Amino acid sequence: MTIVIRRATQEDAEHFVRINAAHAVYANLLQVPHPGVDRWKKRLAEDTEDKLVLLAELDGEVVGHAGVFCDGGRVRQRHTWRMGIGIAEHAWGKGVGTALMTELMKYADDWAQALRVELHVFTDNTRAIALYRKFGFEIEGTLRGDSFRDGQYVSSHLMARLHPRLVAELARNA
Picture 1 (cartoon, rainbow, N blue to C red):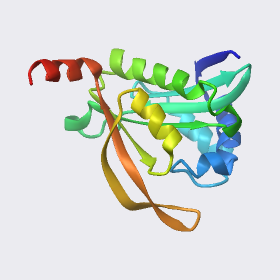
Picture 2 (picture 1 turned 180 degrees about the vertical axis):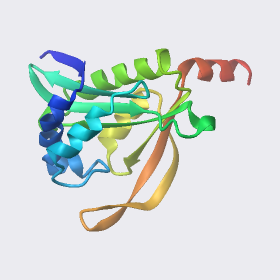
Picture 3 (picture 1 turned 90 degrees about the vertical axis):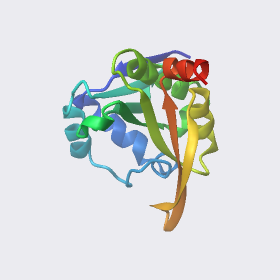
């Protein structure tokens, strides 16, 4: 199996629609069912240095997407970036998430000056939580009943990861 990571373009909107159309995927994202191609084209058209959106191809098939972005509107929080990831169910457990996370964290650490990367993950999404922990994310809090999924209110964890060099520096100064 070969995994190729590449930057997403507007022409990739249909891949996002296909991947996110599966209940197993959209139920674990803060997306709604049946997203339209035009919505994804609009999102992908916003190509700035404050955002990186990647796709993962497994043996030539697009099976995953991930992005990291800075809201940038608040001067005092420009060092804080947010991220999200979605992977087609048939590609789970094949290294796609690891490959996407590796590239996102390289960008955040080495190019974007992100001191902090944060995300929300549903408390029952143990597979995703394990992936995020592998990259240094820690649970900072639980948001009870913060989201609505399949007709029920569900909780999510706020997870964050500090830049590895900062973590080492903080440990030295402790």
